[in-house]
Length: 134
Image (tube, rainbow, N blue to C red; front, side, top):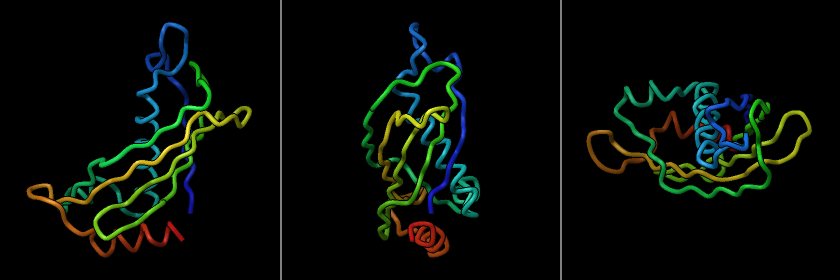
């Protein structure tokens, strides 16, 4: 189950040429992922209140075209690989106006105890992500 998140490039996210700085794509992906988790009934705030952290473990990002100031973007996110103590989300970023693919990537998150080390994904969170992945 893929989730689409809409956003518009802000001026402060661009360089002097009006092109989005590469680091901002990670912020766009994170914004889409947190909205997706909320839509799945697993808001990050509630996950963290349970003492669970989901830190980034690995990022793979491929830039394909430039986004520019004021472009409207669609960030599509879906669950890719789901393991006992980690989950990988897959992303596509497209310019909404013409469908040009701007970037694609994968972000893998580990599951940890906020006050300790690694842990298994809680069953309810794992079920929500597994449902989304199928």
